[in-house]
Image 1: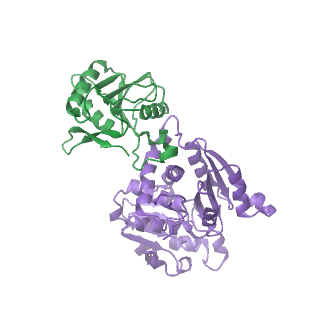
Image 2: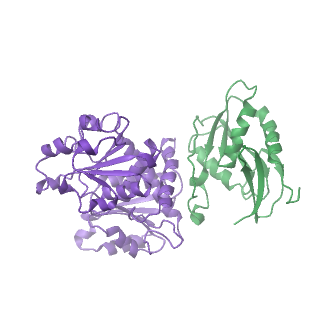
Length: 317
Length: 174
């Protein structure tokens, strides 16, 4: 079957979604990221792998943190980095996505990191680009955010190396979360035996159990004996609709407090992809507590993005 | 040719020989750095030999030079990279790089570039079991247990058996 992410000989050409990635490639990315963790602790935090390459961060939708981590990752690989916030530039003058991409290609860009509010935007660009250009999906609509999924799995693996013996719970707005989808695919592909989702019915996609997860609607049962609690960001704008009664009500039922966390295993870790809504999906005492690995997630995110970029850049036919 | 190709040197004898060459040059400022993977195996065997009667442990680390290779553009990233670990202060240290086979010198160039990203060593020297000829850069080992000439089509590799003993294999290169 044609897989737009892979070259003819099965190497990673673009990173568009974790869905459809072979386990060997996911493991190659995670193992390579291990080597990049140490680079950040050295006197010189750079390696010369992408010297002379140009990475374009094309953000059709704002995301300061994701853009910053991709920028740092590319710079630590010695690439030159161009940041384009297209929402505020040429698209407002009527230029199409493909014209933007063609113009950057004419400037000899080697890699595009794409963020777009529409699902499928990164796939669309990947189908269009010349063979030597690589595309990384940095989040497209509700569809996927593969590097976030990979960095979450990487973080889990660092704290809980035996993935075949884990219970992982994802809590919150699964419906609107591209992160949740990417995480579920990564966890099940790597053989995590039990993935749970905990959310109100209004924030779960239909047939979510087909992704291979167990569904819970309350925290007490859902968090029992889990090893990893992955909180999802509650999109504030969803509050405006009829999906949730109020932030206070949500926090009472689905917000992660020390009391609810006590249902999990005593050595469970707490994760959050950021940015956090303190007091809505997570209590500050948990976010800053001893079980929180939220800041290590950010640090590892750079190593994982360095791994993805260097593997892609090396696969040129 | 110093030796016919079908007769490979005994890697265990060469290791003992190399240990004897290194023993007199080890000081308190020396650090050993093995290059993955053969050089790391060698370093693990050399450390107890060199620390014997020394009175102090020898600082040591390991390098995987995948991120510094000059053939990344042609061959891409190595499939199986291992983290580099330099758990000591490189600044001012006399570093002995350890590798199994010296060939073109490109791996050593990459290793030196990586080391300098940790700090400025006082000196770097190179210890290998075999210099197989064919260098392409102005780099040569200071400590070497054996020299031989091999055609480019052959790949000399250090292997380690289940008991940790070393031997060489010679294969057609890809």
